[in-house]
Length: 92
Image (cartoon, rainbow, N blue to C red; front, side):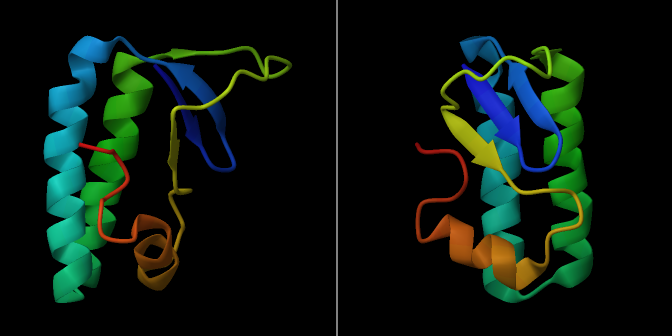
């Protein structure tokens, strides 16, 4: 699976990491719904760190279709809420 972190680039992740990312995505969705800015920041950073840690960065000149697009680390809660809709960042 190819994941794009907005403002950073693309990362290739094995599908076996989907469960961990989905768990973090569920937490992020709960914090967004609650308006929990501190929890949102913490979980967004954990989600992005997991993608960076588990994945392999693609070269900057590579442009593969991204299956997931994650917000930049400095994205505002309202921006991410607009990206999510009702499904979260990671489709179930």
